Length: 159
Image (cartoon, rainbow, N blue to C red; front, top):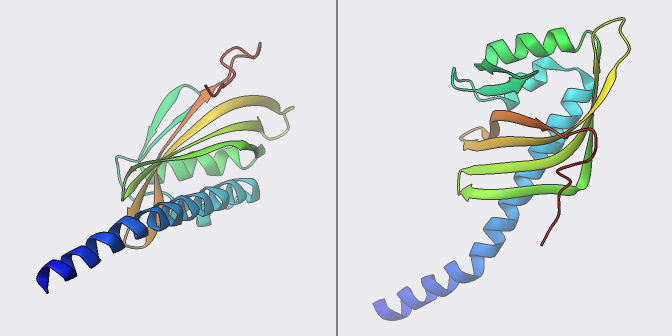
């Protein structure tokens, strides 16, 4: 009887594993979609719930590290006074499972940004987010954009 139960549990694990992976992918994509919508709405209060409440939260912005959720939110509030809009190339969006509770999100984006009253610039970037699953759901632990060279060098290619 024990052998039969072990076999049933093992079979269930094999068949349920892909379902769990798909569910994780969907959950992470939904949080990423909220991240983009909140960015475009300039809603720093909602962004607070997406960022991990930790001094180890990291956002690389304009070539410098911004450590901690509060510092990142303060910086975003300043940016939101001007032009700040993200467009995501959904065909390039990838969710990479690092573990059951950690995911890496990669997406090609177009950021239109500029200080208040200034002409905004458009920058293409590969955005990389590390997300962690907390009891309250998936949250962003780091935002690491990599600017795409203007000449198009570095264009992604799938082998």
